[in-house]
Image (tube, rainbow, N blue to C red; front, top):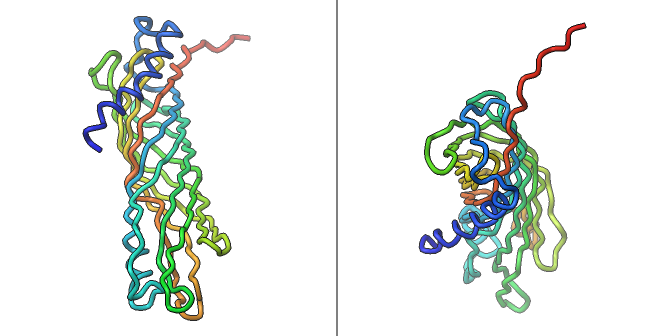
Length: 245
């Protein structure tokens, strides 16, 4: 995976460079060094690494439906998508709203008829809204500077699972996120953003037979999120004097 990072970086940078060239932004005005009043929209896609070890240990443990059965292949991650709408309240502090979504298919073994073992697919989906603060600054790196940031976000999420042949299990949960990333400003308005997030988010999973295996069983759609995206910034409006009456 690490050997593909240069290719992924190049593919992510190409749209931002093309948009900047098309709008005539390259070689134009300089990006602001003071971030106070700067707004941005960032669109990202990436991959998350989620082990779900807690789920597998309880499912295949002594009191789980998979006790003594051969484990089904384990899924360790899934694609993610996110959009950030943010505004810098000061040169160092940015407030933002993030929309995100992710989906993953798991497989779990359970007893079947006549003593057989059945491997069933579990489809999981999570989406939600995050609100939080990011602390940022400007470094003199790259064409128009590098903006590193770190922050904490939280918000409601809808998370669901559906075992093959069973009913949908869904609940509203609270997601907690730690964020660390940077935006390489390619022009005064366009940039390339890389972000790492560590998320806590768990959802419900139905037992094959609640009378035999009460559980509760739950899965994670959190873990380590890695994403690349394109950022468009809105420079602060120039100050206007108050109209005198």
